[in-house]
Length: 219
Image (cartoon, rainbow, N blue to C red; front, side, top):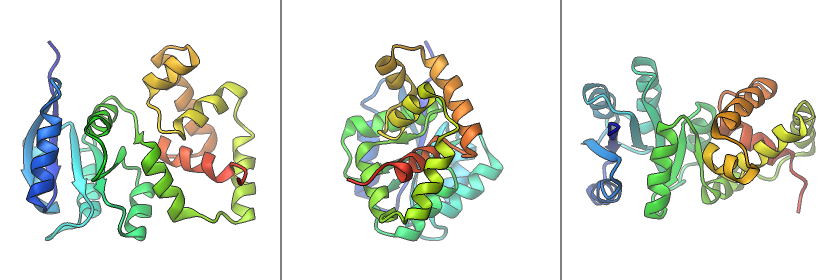
């Protein structure tokens, strides 16, 4: 039997933390190994408990969640960061995107979405749900003509199949889901993602998805 996905939950609201634990531990392959209330403890406890995934709230005392995520990446790059957010602070959300978080989960998301986000992050995917995508697009719109044209120009380097894969990434699908949709293996999708990121100069699939949305026509 494979080892459970070890998750740290960092949020200064006890009710949120308790709810997240209850949801995650309803999944047979997920174990919550630590709960913390500030960013400093998130870094230390994630390392101490050898967490695979850290669910980190943006707004926390002592050290904010994004600073904690940055430090955790430096000290333990193998820990995948999933941002837990209500999307109340635009600059923080944009910073999280730029820094390559492995996922974004709204605090009012469904239990199934939370579990999928953790599994996707652990599996090397970046989880970008349709609801989160809409929120992010709301922060970034309107896209000025110059940025839209530049995004479209960069996407011209992709093959038709790579464009198909990227379109589904922008819809929030995981590699496994994309493989099923396109009747391809998950391994093949991962190979395509590596090529797409290299061609577009993106650090992660979230950035690539946003670039795809920038290039999309209005309407």
